[in-house]
Length: 127
Length: 369
Image (cartoon, rainbow over all chains, first blue to last red; front, side):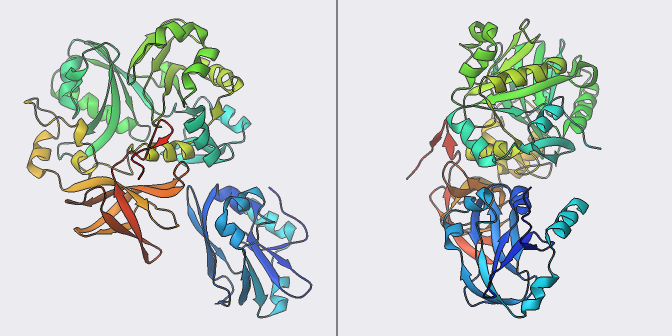
């Protein structure tokens, strides 16, 4: 299980990468893709949609199950990764390269409240 | 506490993802479910099916017993070794289990029943035997007589099994589909080899003593056979249009409403448990396949809308071979293959085509338009 140190995480298995300009890249963790198994369908939110923190925003379907991914913090969707829609398996191949959407956070400080790598690892181990 | 098969440690050594399957801890995949699925369609894969229960049914009255117990007629089994798929019904015509019976001779049959229904089935069978005052012995291959069962499936299955077990080639190379044979002596002790399966591909199901099972499993892996989990087993059986007990039918469902009329013998004057209920009820639903015409994945319990009314998906998945979502569904009478239907997925009604299963046989799409 890979948990890069430089990213932030949620208890619902999203990762967040904050760019210098404040934009957030959001994806699902390696642990999440492993739990789901081979992904075959991804539905992303519309660009411009305003998301509340923890709002279901992405549908992920694997051969065995369907799951949602949630907005890690409140914000507006500024871009989505169409490559993931075209080839959902790229999330299985590299969950941290295959970002799902970009979010402009309503409050940049919200990101600091997310889990760091050690806290996310602890959260998984406790499950 | 979950039950484990004799191959549990072998699965863990391969880093399988283990799940609770009807009270058994079983491998769902060893990495990629889709990869395992393709291995079976294109080459060869092996499944641990030791959770299923083989039962030897022997004795003077065993044929009469089976003719009364199950919906299909074992009298059809004229050749020694020939196998039969059947439903076992309760008095109200609901499916207690689906099973395979091999006729070795008229006083010696082997029955293979599902894992989750084993205790219930054995109790039911023993009670009927007593009620009907028939003489037969039912011996499950569990406990003291513990057996392992592995299914080697795929176009190269025979070749790979013979590479690991050259001494059985002569005895099995002319075994037609849906047969079983006892091999008294091999490097792995006594074997029962059957040309039955649950994938729509050629292959062997091998039953042997628990003590020999891991050795044969490892020999097959060493011969290049891919270990495959229950995840791939489910997508393979669904593509092959085969029902899963507990999902496509159960005790509340008539076999006539689960696409199993072909193996229910209502024509002859033989009586069997559930027959009078089936004759009184008749068929109330059709059971057909669906192919989703848009992106998405079909799942069990999704609602289906057809011209004739509403129905329900009983099994659904994404087909790795066809690369579309497929399903088995219970639909109103009158719906036929070629019709359009709609399936509700997350509040949206998406178009689907009604088709006659199977979707895939021997590696090829069936009835592709």
